[in-house]
Amino acid sequence: MDAYLEEELYDLMTFCIQNDPSSPDYGAKKDRAYQIGKELYNDGGVDAMENMYFAIQNRISEEIQKDAKPYRSWWNGITDEWKY
Image (tube, rainbow, N blue to C red; front, side):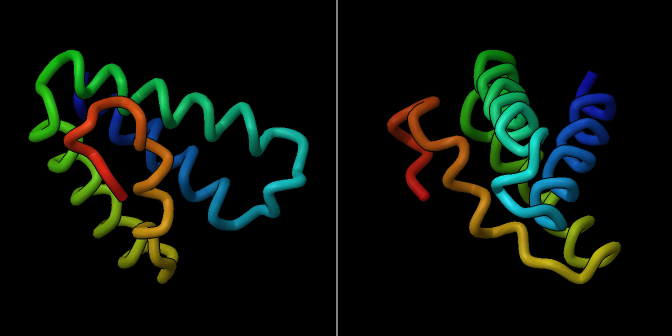
């Protein structure tokens, strides 16, 4: 399941990084990314969220040469332990 979620989250984030927030699908993709964060938290807590985001951040950096750090805040509100 983690591999599936990683691939989906990667696709969602690369879309959002490469497109303007006013694009038609941006909001839906951002919402789905938040839902993935909730799924990860429910399954494995903050450690699962950190591990997934680390993997995504590295992939995005290597594959499309962009910074995914600003998007960590999308998961704010899932738990008080995640504050970015």
